[in-house]
Length: 226
Image (cartoon, rainbow, N blue to C red; front, side, top):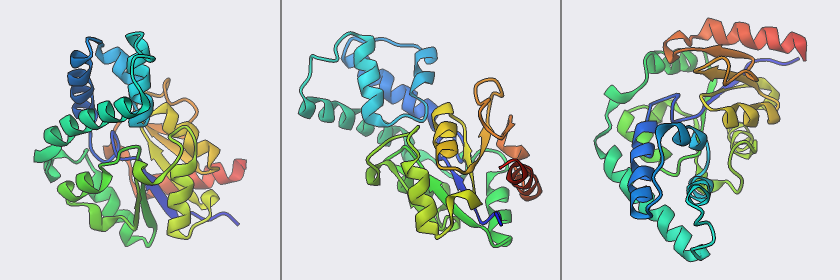
């Protein structure tokens, strides 16, 4: 019988909103490469790995063939250096509404809590936010071969938590993340726009709406359908 045992979170846009810092960091790199882009294009980078994001930006400027593999790695590092500088002053004040309460509620109920992030800075960010001890395991982009929508990062998190994927809920704000959760055979909860995250089992408009009773109800309803 399927039983809810764990909740696995994305980081950016779910635990904290570092999307603005990613945008600014990519924009700085784009300026250096003479590839301007707007916030609308930046939306296509949400939930996508750093390497893939760089490829999309280079393709936007028709410069995807202008750099060697090593040069691309250096460009990706340069973007990350910009990002690390920008997030240096993140504190627990940057947690999204209700997240600390929700994490504490899950912990109190004996559920496992995981993080499945496309960021290679997940440990640094969760430490600055003051919530790292609440996570039983963190999987970041540095330890996975395939980025979302591939389910690898969620499957690795579930395995590390010792929980079957079908007994997990995944929480995401990006369509690529929702696809990854579904492919991992977990129950997907989206945070954001219902139309964009239409493949999620349930969508909340704000993290403040997340609570233990809600996720249990969503899981039980979805379990009946499976």
